[in-house]
Image (cartoon, rainbow, N blue to C red; front, side):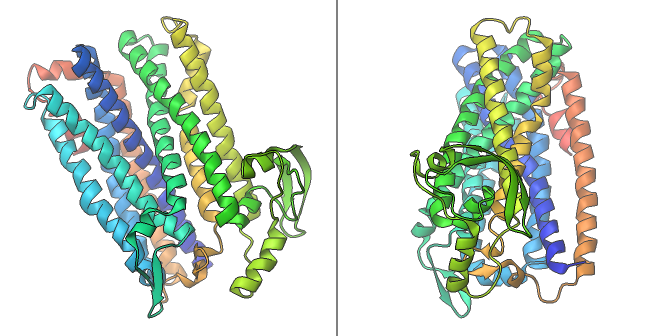
Length: 467
């Protein structure tokens, strides 16, 4: 039982599980805000019922996301205290702002939105959900500001053996942040959109509440397509940024041991041998890597062996090549999932424009149900590539992963907490799925019945389900 590997596994598992919920909250908040905006503008009751129905799923997901986020932060003190001491003065600031500003903002306006349906004017109530949407997005911004420092440290000075912030504006102006944030945010919008299209497709297959779920499907499909295309565009910018700031990660994601040549081809698939440091069975697309890296069909990309020699001279002896197979394949899984999302989104909009959503093809609706998984696969693979590709660094160029571990923690303790957290997460996952299924099966018009008994449609189903 290797202590460092156990600690990394625990942080990876809790982060991945937590990030199942974060993009859903961000994406659903936007869709609910759009639906309620249509209700306020057009005055059509059906769109109000949409906001209320999808709002129940949003609330459940938001509540469980809070729990998983708290468990994730415990690890900074449990397993990574040396890391926390080293970067706490920098890393702590954006995390504190996220908690005190963005999280409190979204939590406050969620409460007003839940209980304000019959107590606030329609426009004021609409403002609440848009502020919730802004709050969820700002939470992502501040978290990514901290993560971007780990990818490209800026705005700091080393004093007393620790990194101390000396320029908050440099931290907020970090180029890594401004390619990472829109990529992640649009990915979250796509995640919420594909969840709504998938659930709507399932209900349409069953012939239930056809008008309601057809309109939900159309709104979400449009958002999903726009967001998916945006993810690809900002992903392209992020790849170009990596060529300049983390060339080793870029080389590993391409399985590139030596120089690429000029023009550089993009490797679609390959069998990678990290021991012999060579590939076999490669299928390549000419010129594409040059375009991805330089926005032109010429230019070479440095390989890992050249960069290893450069890093050894710059940082001292050590192995600076990350796990190549993981970095290589996680990047391709992310690209494949994102490409499929764009294709199915385009076909969904085609059906809408051609007025073929009245009786949508069953085969396509089944594909849309399965497509719920695509953004989760893309998000997870993207983060694995981002974090694994940075190894052996916890903070690039400043602190290696092995140096960030807590000095007094044992492998047995980490294993116990890993198993405990996994058990807790499994229970939470079962609860969430059961609540989702229960609400989806009941459909959108159960809340209409409850409004005759109470002015708040969440009194019985949404709020108490979370409780």
